[in-house]
Image 1 (cartoon, rainbow, N blue to C red):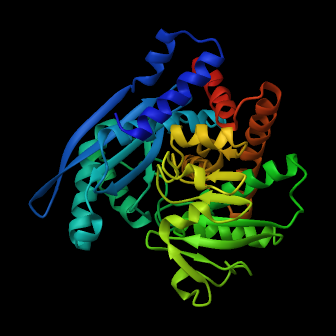
Image 2 (cartoon, rainbow, N blue to C red; image 1 turned 90 degrees about the horizontal axis):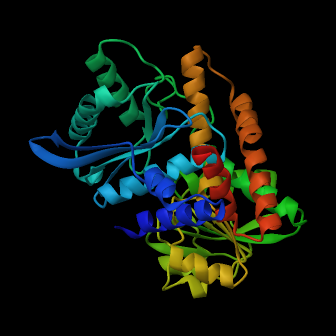
Length: 394
């Protein structure tokens, strides 16, 4: 069992036990409803591929598809399980699912990437659709890839099903606001935490790991809405750039342009002296080896599973607040839900309307998580998981 799956299951078990559920109920919930193990081909080569459909109590399965050399069945199980918790935590009428192909997409030509994507969608066609399972983009996938999959899926089933996938291109029926949704959601959750602790108007510093789509939009929207929260460090997989005078996210789309910043090793971001550490890269970024070096008192999980179970225990012992991924990065799945709703209704909402609905959906469960944690003296993660499991197991 990989680290991420073990962490997800331990968090569920802890929350379920805290609510009084017995072991048989917990074990039944942990087991996915369906697991599809496939082989998909492109240019004469075959690649292992997966789709795990974890739980559909709240509604159709929902979850991204990632193309990455390190994809494994356990990783996909973990992400599908966490998606069940995430959709329930924020009260969406969706269940949990996840998919992936074990491939380095950079090694494929565009034609090979299209062939691979179409083969995957064709094999999964009997098991997905707007009332069963609604995939979306994830690591190394995007609107173009999803458009190929929608086209292949509809050809395979012989009819239109516009709500079968989300994260489509705008031309393909995608939603306004989708690209920025996860980053925007992270800002909303952080702001609610700071508001609850009387810190929203204070001058605070932010260090950000991961400056891809999620990290960039988080930084940009944070600067627009809360200029008192100053971004002082960003990191990608190669370097950390530290600039205590502040980094202007409205102009910096590529950190390599920060020629006046101090350049440090990539993993140095974890130990930067900042008030807030935002983790927007990959899972297990903060672990037993580096957790003691975390200086920030507030950690925002914008990636999936960026803090391991061992690291979480160290951080909580140090009285640090961890805003958990199942709430903090739920903006993406919320706007996916809104895209699905638009597709089912034949509508196309403005970006302002999508952003308004995103906040309307995300603020109440964030407030509920903060309140529950304070009342029960438990971590924010346990509070979020308890809120979800009350819906899933109740």
